[in-house]
Image (cartoon, rainbow, N blue to C red):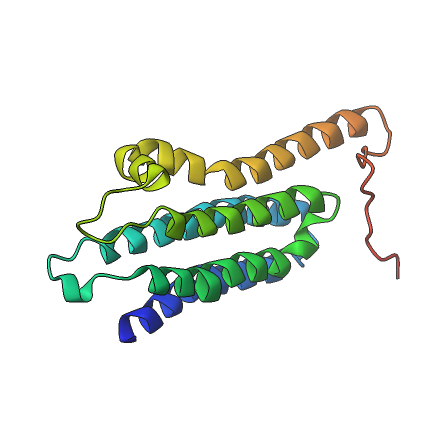
Length: 187
């Protein structure tokens, strides 16, 4: 139980605190700073998923079977650590994603889905791997690239929005909102 508490602590420490800090940085009224914070958050999602993958990998590789994690512990880790972390992180930075909230929501929900995939790929030591578990264990490079998808969604949103803003600004027009609008307060 102590290791599980440490896992929750490290997941939340490594992902939650930076997300809260980036959320506060996104309140600054300087577009370049906000843009840099959005890019940093995109990579934070990937870092959180990679940290969880390392924790899962280490949790099943101890030579002493008594210290290997069980499927129940993985579900608790995902349900009490990973998924809340992804949701809280997305909420913490939402102010910086005005006009990009769809991309933020998709990236956050995809991160949640990836957290759910970890226990589905779990097989206790000595048991045969299931299809997802076999894929996870045999294709580490592909795993890392797959975990990058939420980050790529946010980065693509950033690049697409910047290009649209630059082209509209050059013509003296308002940048397009893609139907989601800019819901900033005018107070």
